[in-house]
Length: 288
Image 1 (cartoon, helix red, strand yellow):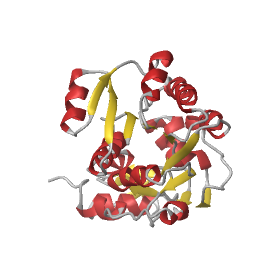
Image 2: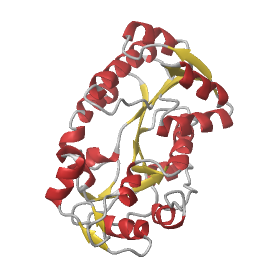
Image 3: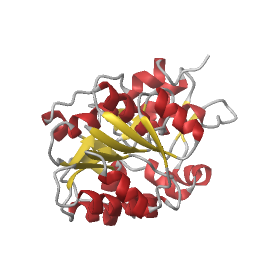
């Protein structure tokens, strides 16, 4: 298939691009710079320079493809506007067709929950409170759609988990755990997540919401202990975490979440990467 991809040089998008190419798909990746163009070309995709906020142009480019995947995220106050625009372009380009559109959400939309599935009611924190209304534009459309819901993404020493070993030590040398540390994080290796997108795409139909999460849901205390390599670990406290990381971000990180990926498994997806605990203790987050 000829797939239009946004965010092809990003953390998630670069993994998706790699798995698409390995799966035999031709990828046209939207880029903004020559540096990004070189990266996606080296990965086996065709670079397309353009402005993701130009909806008329974007609609025309998406319409040329057999399917589209949106992984780009500014990660700032413009995120909602960008996503609304991409969804608008996808609806105009693919509406009333069988061409698949895959959109990227995030596990935080479900708020605190001990057993998160695709049927769990949404209760997002302030940081991602905008997501449900954007996703409703997709679910209420005539698109052939899937919304991938990644857990906390890790791997290759990047992503949110890199915050854990990098936290400033206390005067005694202890490593602080975000909040009280008792909250669970559900997580997924970035390479496994990339394979999930292709698994969903290759089904040939809209799969609705699909959670991408590994089998383990450790606590932040457990994760910080793995990252500490023998150093003492102490709870930081909610107020201190909010001051250090910003209130909205810290509140999202203090959500207590455990998820299961039953639908993804039913589609044939099988995560293969190391667990987050393993990666923090002896893998890509360790530094000499």
